[in-house]
Image (tube, rainbow, N blue to C red; front, side, top):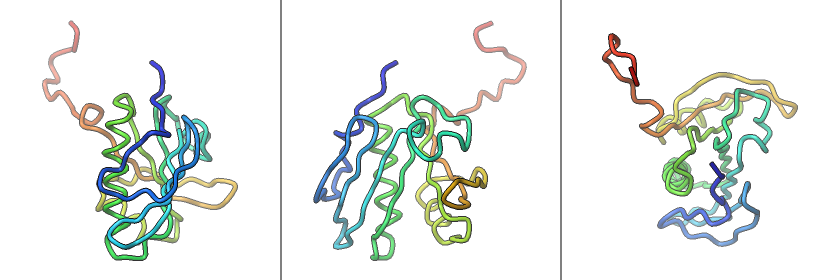
Length: 150
């Protein structure tokens, strides 16, 4: 399975002011509802998170900055998750690392559909990792008496 090219990712109705990067990482300067910010999407195996958890081949780290308008951060993050799922249908996890002291950022990520997983210490500081996973990853077969494929 080959990784999808992240450089062509589209965020729907989010206006992209500039785009730079390559197939495994892209940085977008965007305007959403009058609030400008930056979105960075990177394959987790090439990001600062590569040693923070058991990274999957198609996992993606997302980092957002800016977006002064209330709610813009959450809405852009929701669009990023949808865009990653559309661009790379094999992506199992979209991961965001929020500063361990910034509970508002974690709550905002949770409002965007992420769930808290664990705290990690990286060279740049301590972070809380939250993850958004597609339904095919989180669905559970409740027939516990049946072994799949048997």
